[in-house]
Image 1: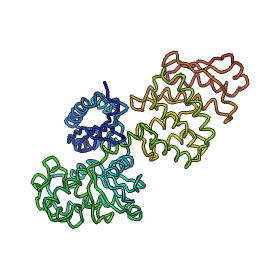
Image 2: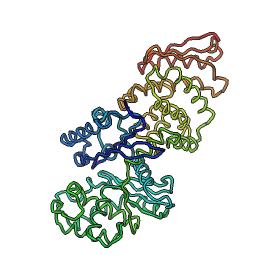
Image 3: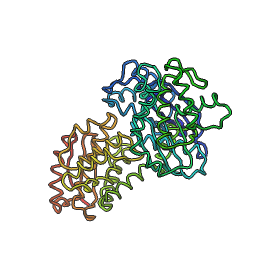
Image 4: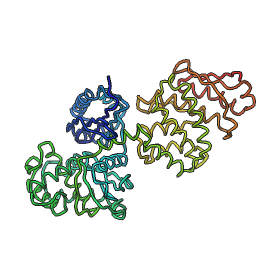
Length: 501
């Protein structure tokens, strides 16, 4: 029988795949198992965004092993995310179907800034609480996250497409190491950092922390090479380490104390990035943390399962920023809440779908901030491309599709473009949102009438309104007649009827 107090987080990074399993005890998480495999996904991705067969097979085999460990944990207690290399896949949906089958649970792709937020949450839980402002650096296999914040939340978050795997391959393609190659690569990274480095320096911090395997490996080498030095990575020590790496002459010849055999093929690129970050942000000393994205995922998961879901705050902030009409949002949300109670189970919708549907309702008029004409399309664009802390790319794609197609003729191809696991739910959620928007087109509280919604099957929906109500609301009656045709394009049958009060 599944144990509901067990939680798991899976970090599918560009260099390594990590899994952490923890038990909740007295409000705290106690780690009971960890798994890590160095898959080097980024190293197997070609310029067209396709995975080489050997890398693909290694990734799927690793996911199958992880999946066995996850088998007895409820899906609601698991979060698995893919990072930079997943973001670069040319056709992620095709690979995700197979990958999710191997792992046994959904895999979410997170944006670079969302990845940075999760890293910050993980590191914050493992560091002293008496630091007012903290800077966190995470050098992954395919990207580097830079995030600064206070004792509770990240304030600034950025991601650059330079990671230890990709940068090693870019800077030292033939495996030879030279100071000229090092400086050329560092110049590229500095150029990417230039766009936001001054903002971070102006924000300031009391402590700088590194959380990745690259940074822990650097600390391990420095500890063994300079045993008398206090813990922490300083720029002078980093230059000493750089000189020793360059002196080896080739990646295959690297043999420094504290450098593992698994880390050796990618450490040079990681060091280039760290050198550039410390220079650009003028970091004098960098501490290290054992916590990172996977721990952040766990804490974020607990927040999602409680009253501390970061997505709630994100939606509230966006609704205010784009001046969405709260009264109209309340009307649509209220109707949808009742509709979900009546047909949610029959339409095979779960609580996670209810949350996303109601968030879409809260933001369904966000496009009016741009223009009334084509406002739905504008809203869909905003939700697809905005930074939305707490939301994954797949969740944003679903919200975008719902808002963009809330009116007029729906495009079935937009639903088909969603991940397969969201397509059926997305179709039903869209039908409910469209009905709510249609019923409250007049933006009047008096239009909130009793109704009965039934689903004879997942493809057949019946809406009943009080006898005579449609006769006194001719615009709504006309719109609902058109909605019968529109929903047919989504493969859904809508029947209209009446009941006596």
